[in-house]
Image 1 (cartoon, rainbow, N blue to C red):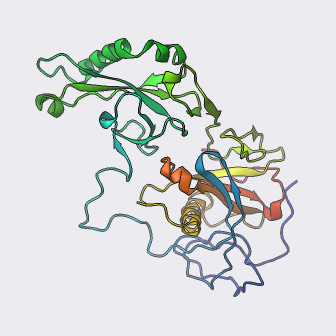
Image 2 (tube, rainbow, N blue to C red; image 1 turned 30 degrees about the vertical axis):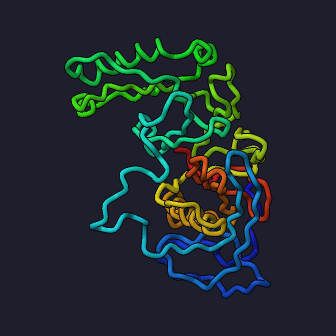
Image 3 (cartoon, one colour; image 1 turned 90 degrees about the vertical axis):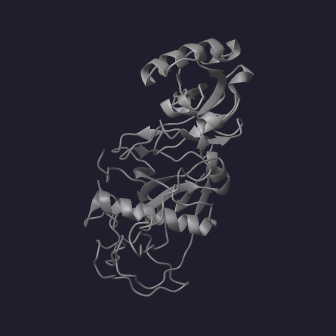
Length: 327
């Protein structure tokens, strides 16, 4: 059976470009939880309340009970203003030294830029060696990649080999033709953990300490959000569950960590846009409440820019069906 529908006929969300139907709110009368759609007419100010549950690896679960009206469309780079050469805080993989740990850029996981961080913080990869290819004419990218793979295999310390026998893939940085002609034949040998979790210790310690992490996808149903680890228990959406995944967004355009309230507003804005993409003009917000997980300051400093947009049942009731189509 579907969850019960609220008696309150006032919609918590209006389709794009529709006039607001919100009644004025006061601090004594909190607004109906919901996300205002992009480009909707600004309505009366609502009371801002945040229910925060701290999660691991810099994520917080925030009840999205603020109304966010997106003014001015997307946050694209103004015309005539050059785009930044790389995301804020990211560096070239080739600039790291052996033993440095990093996290890839989610929007460009195979790109040259990574986010460096302490090896005892959650991370994805580690530089295991530095090497230089033999001199001579530039052999081409394919041949240079083969040579780099061979030299990196040779240079990887034995104690790292022992713990990286499975669930790792090479993430070697090789010189471009321009770098080669400029005299730079250096190779950065790195290993990326693909075991579905985050590393929390250096590979050189001789063991892998990871945090179980379920890779979430749009439409997944989470039985109960876990704060004691990355792993989220998934169930069939016909079973009782706390949340369903609406989708994901990134905060790559934000240069510095804002206040917690500003972060919540930015996350709510991003999830409102996503709600329009997923539901269009027929959101089921008489039965569900938008929620999200966004980076804490600590998580931000560790390179986390992700926002997970979620939906939960009205008034905290469990969900028993799917409201989000699978990708």
